Figure 1 (tube, rainbow, N blue to C red):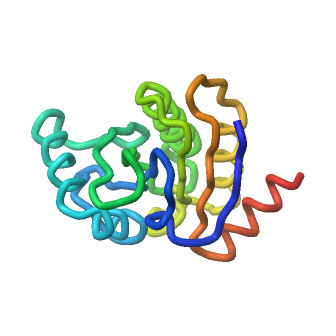
Figure 2: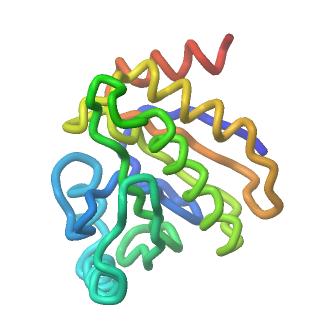
Length: 169
């Protein structure tokens, strides 16, 4: 599996799947979550509402999959990262669980390419360096069948440099 790094807008990529750093309500929010919902349109929200009605949202560390609506992707995998609580609530394990569940859904849905944003490093305040290490380690350890390419998509220069340094090491 190839791992790539880009700085830019995840909603513009042509990939099989885009990962959304969602909240437990699945109804959209700020940051990448809001951007994906705005760019993808109402079909994503409709799928999210159906999931909420069926199972009450998405818990921290878990993931669900929806249509990609107006995006160029085929699917959006929504995962809810942990809020940083000074490592008092198993946040690193919960973040790793996000990536593991995303990979599981990508394989189950036979996605060959996946774009992943920086999960939990915005409003949830997970330390960016720790989050990058967890993301890269978990993706590099993945042994799947369908997934051929993972693209880490950083919106800001700070995250981009952190990922670049870890990938270069």
